[in-house]
Length: 231
Image: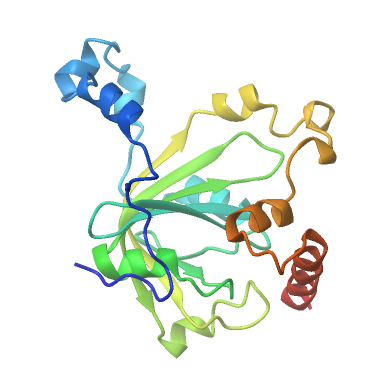
């Protein structure tokens, strides 16, 4: 069992955390693959055969175009997490047809994804190209490397990172674009107005519930963090 990241305590049900609604729905939920197939028909032949076990040339080209990748991981107890990584196009390096390397940019130092990888050695990736609906999913084994010979090659974030996530590719397949199309993800005319949603500073303030903090102070800290990040 992996240790809990420093200063991070997973949420657990308690007296002030009602779970009755979930428990009621879970009691009557689908419990096995046969139950799923009572709801959904079998996938088509193309869907079954679109998965490969390596980074072929077209997949390599798509990864080189991607400036945004989502990392899915879980700890040894099965608690899941998804974290985005962004940078210039091609921030993820294809070392060979079976191996990828993702430089770890300095963040909030919680290290959620890295803790999960150290604990389970698994990862799932979703490569996104902003403005386009083509995506690529990659699943496989993973480790956290601090090998200086590798890190010196990974300068997409401006300098060698402190570590890199190395992925041993097991599954590669394109993902259906319907989610991006339904969400109008790349259509500015359909986007919400900026003031129609809580800002990141407002979300942070609501989570911290610290009377000494203000939205303005958090916004100032965010601006400074972004300034130093991109210098």
